[in-house]
Each structure stands twice: as C-alpha cells, then as structure tokens.
Length: 192
Image (tube, rainbow, N blue to C red; front, top):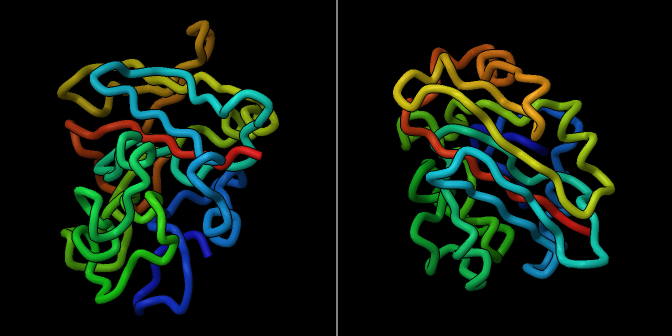
C-alpha cells in the first residue's frame, strides 16, 4: 500500500498520496537498511543531487515531495526511529495510536496528515513521474525547483540545465487546495 488508510494498518506502509510508478512498495522499504537509503533535503537551497553509495543505483523513491514533509537526512545517518527522531510522523503528525512499522529512520519521514489529527496525508507536490523514472538505475539524480519564496504558485520543478520546468500545481494531488508557502523539499530513495 502506498497511502495512509483510515484505520491503524496491520503492517508497514508509507504516509504519502504520491501515485507515481517510481514510488517504492512498503515491503521494499521495510527490507532496506540505512546503507541502502539515499537522502536529499536541499534547505535553504532549492536543488541538489540525490546520490547512492558507490556501486549502488536508485531502485525506487520512498518520498520525493515538496510540502509539509517531516524527516531529516541527519536522522537517517544517526539511525533514528520512532521514539528517538524529532517527529515520529505516525503518532506526532497523524492520529495513529501505534507507529514505527519500519523500525528505522523511514518512520521519521512522511507528509504528515491533514490537521495533524487525521490519517489523510497532507498536500504535497511530487517530483514529476517521467523525471523520477529517469533516475531509476542511476547512481545519482539531480532534483530541484525554482520560483518565489512566498508564492508557492510560482514554484516549478526544473531540470538541471534549466531546459524544462513543470509547475508544482501539475504534480500534486488534485484534491489539494494549496501547498504551504514555507514547505520543504525532501527526497528519500532506496538504492540497490
């Protein structure tokens, strides 16, 4: 399963509404150890390169979202999980009574939930599907955006050479009325 559901789940799943084919299935994420996770959170920058360890390539994305996304690369490096990370998304940003199904830093990541007291993932803009698919099988991948700081409607995903731009409004959930102006870009991928 790729999205949160209305009841506490019987097993691991991801807190996202990202429908793209590049998203990992929950079982792949559950098997991944820290060594096989690549992280990117270009803040305050708006772009960066997601890179696997030498000899590994990107096999799928856990998260590739701009919005109210929790989690940090430092938590991943430090091997944190629910109980030790700054925000255990399952319990702190959503209303699940239990959480921490991955038992690793992935439990610290997620788009949070609407209002913090539901199980519906919050709005996010997702890395364009074709661009994410193009990253699969590569050792590293550029991910970035351009646009105004305070007006999220001006933000666009951008290719490294600037040759193509896709508005955030074309890459989020259609049910999302808006993205937070102070949102962040966070990317987490499984390498193999």
